[in-house]
Length: 122
Image 1: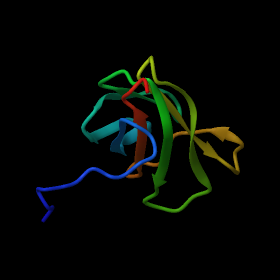
Image 2: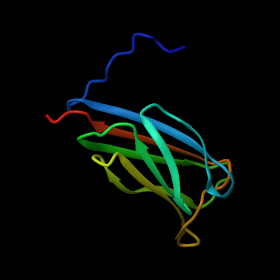
Image 3: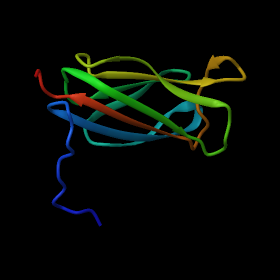
């Protein structure tokens, strides 16, 4: 059970906000159930390409981590393709190493994302 008196982490940056989310991959790379506060939507823009749209605009992104949890291990990996703090978006793509191309993850895989954003102009 979580402690209801959670404290803020100490950071060198002012106004840093952590925005975690995850979703399960369905058939043909479809976005399944999305969990995570602060995320308005996740859409599959084409094979292996996903756009995460945040609920709010931030002054900057300090860090973006993406992880592909595979139901069956393959030689695919995930990385950030593009991002825009003012546009509230993060684009990620799944790369198939042996095919040498962007491709959909397998059905049942999960994508986890952690965005650390700056909520201050200082």
